[in-house]
Image 1 (cartoon, rainbow, N blue to C red):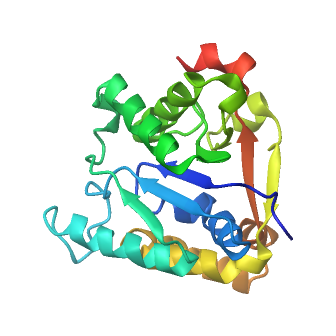
Image 2 (cartoon, one colour):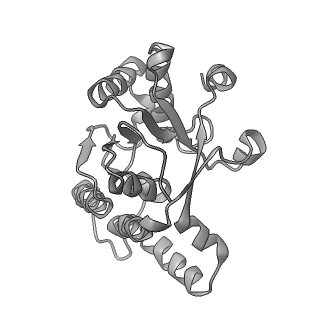
Length: 231
């Protein structure tokens, strides 16, 4: 399936592997179509919970491991414009609001995207996810309405469907299934147990597992409905 044509796609997430779970198939598909994609990853996930048992990493070595995994994931997706923004894991929520907005504004000005993908505010669970989403929304909100890129959000809170309904956008990413699995496997320090479970479910023919590898879902940010609720 061909995805809608875009001038440039900007993806912004706080952690290595955030992209692998929800958008790696979309990223790979856009790249195959010849659409430029930039992925800005705000941290190196240095506070990731999985250090192994027995430990394969320390708090000091984990950022280096996760950086290499992020580079490998980018390669798996065919991504060449990867921006590592240098913030610290689990502290994004404490960053100065204006600093965050300016970071997003600069990314948007440099890449001139027609589509921005990030988390959907209030439905992204993790504080770093929420802080990232709010900064992106604020930056785009400041733009002239006629110049704003589309904003698509990944939402996975338990109340998502109850409050937002079914996803507005569903991308058929079956042609990029291998790239999605490659991105997931690249982040092996954090995804090993998930991949083991995924392989088991796929072997058993579980429809939900197959569906997850075949389709990616997004919500249009609803400016008039949601902006006041976001802040």
